Each structure stands twice: as C-alpha cells, then as structure tokens.
Length: 235
Image 1 (cartoon, helix red, strand yellow):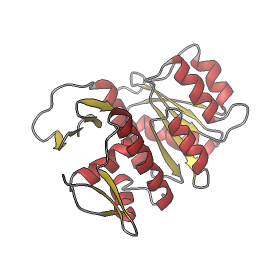
Image 2 (cartoon, helix red, strand yellow; image 1 turned 30 degrees about the horizontal axis):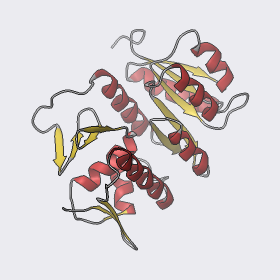
Image 3 (cartoon, helix red, strand yellow; image 1 turned 180 degrees about the vertical axis):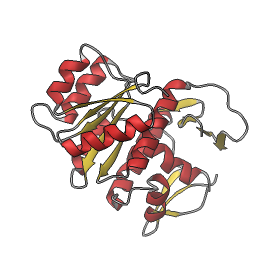
Image 4 (cartoon, helix red, strand yellow; image 1 turned 120 degrees about the horizontal axis):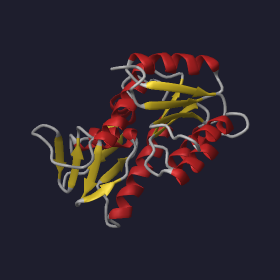
C-alpha cells in the first residue's frame, strides 16, 4: 500500500518515543500517521481535518485524553479511539471507556497487539453489518458474534462492544457452561499484553453485563463463579 494513500491515524501522546515507535509501526502497515504532543494541539488540527482513527494517551499537558475524547465524540460519534494508559490509571481508563473509547492498551504494550487492534477497528468501519460466510459467525443461544467484523448482537439487537469486550465474550461464548479463570480470559483477550490485572477483567465483565442489560433487562447468562472466574451459562 502506498504510504501516502493509507488511512490517516493520529497519535496523541506527549512521549516522543511513543510517537516515533507507533508512527514507524503504522507506516510499515501502510497507514498514514501524524503525531501530536498534547490534546490541545491535536484538537486544533482535528477541527480542520479529522483522522480516520485516534491513538490517544490519557495524561497529557494542556488538554488530557479524556477531554479530547469527549470533544471528538461531539464531532463524530463513530470515530475509532484507542487509549494508551499506564497500569495505575485504572479509574481514568474505565472512565475513558465510559466516554466512548473503543479500546485501550496498557503501557508498556506490544506493538503487534496495537497494530492488530487498529486493523480490527478499520475492519469494523469498512465492513458494516451484513451476511457472513461459513465460519465467520458464532451463534450461542440468542447471541450472534461476527468473527470477521468483531460485532455482536443479542436477540437481534446490536451490542456496542469494545474489541476487548468482544474478545472476552467470544472466550466465554465458545464454551458455554465452562468456567474461565481470570488468567485464561486475560490470555485470550490480551494475547500479547501481560500488563492486565484481575481487576481490569472484572471491570470489563461488569461493563459487558451492563451492555446486555441495556438491550435485555432480564439477561443473566454471564455468571460469576466465586473463587474461580466467569462462565456463559448453558441454558
């Protein structure tokens, strides 16, 4: 792919080494990266031309990532946003997902995993809901998972999941009735990222349940097995 013709990906991070390494990786994958050192600089630029995807740090001078995320959602609700956060920023990380970020990775992170998640988000954009070929979908009771587009439906209603939430749900849904430990869920949702805590998995499961309840107030199929982990109940 021509480097100048690929999708425009913005990197907003005040760490120069993050800007440089992520930009290099994006260029190798055919994307067109542009780095910004703080939220205000990025916001001034985005009002003239929005990127196709934003990789966004939380703690930055002048305007932090949470504020920039909020402003961007006011301009375009469907703009893909991935947060980069430190391990000890769990409250801000959760708040960022509540505000509409699509996913996050903890620093230090695997560049391969970041590139995978960038590609998945573009796949979502480029392949809106439609029919699947054989092997591209998983159906469990009233749950439909599109394995090509990383989208989910419950009883025909769309679930607005992040990539991580989708991967956790896929792990649970592939083996109904089987208890998955938090360690196993971490391994399957974050295959290249070891900097994830049990508490982070619990936060994702809590949000998953809430999103199901928004479309089905009687949903109870994601079950906590105390002392072990979680399972998708077999009806």
